[in-house]
Length: 193
Ligand SMILES: [Zn+2]
Image (tube, rainbow, N blue to C red; front, side, top):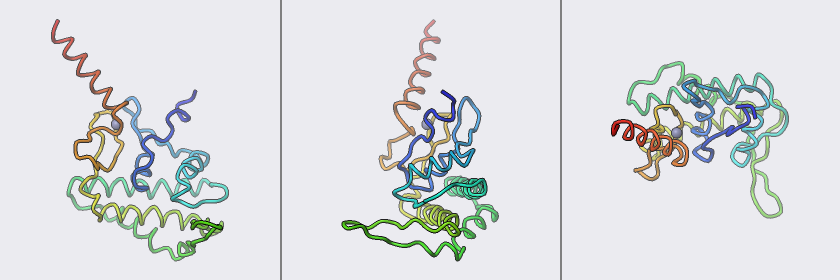
């Protein structure tokens, strides 16, 4: 199976801004961009459909725009975690997504029984998407979870999560936690001989 279809999007279910940041992963020491094609972005949007309304096709322009905003979010998350000044370009990218007037067409719909987000029309949907991603990033960076932002402790992993349990060190105990335990065991074993 090609790498692009195995474990495509790890660690979904964090705040959307982190799920977005986590579309860049490390595999064997290389940073891999999982949002590499319109089909890949479409797949990610399907995973996130409850939180990010989207209907219709995804274009190459959508991919470029989402990746640009994601890279700005990653820079801002890094600056927040390192307590440093954020680069103006990253702030500008985020604020531009929020200021886009076409993004105001977000609407609430209602089925017979429950509320739902109405998917935006074609000419506004990219703006609505970028606005939703940027708004979540702001809520995360300035909200109570900001001090719980963490990156996986495994040296070959860059996934981020909100550590609701302060003892959490790994993105996923079954993968990175286990990899670290195996490495420690190997070292102990080697030192014993
Ligand atoms: Zn990890």
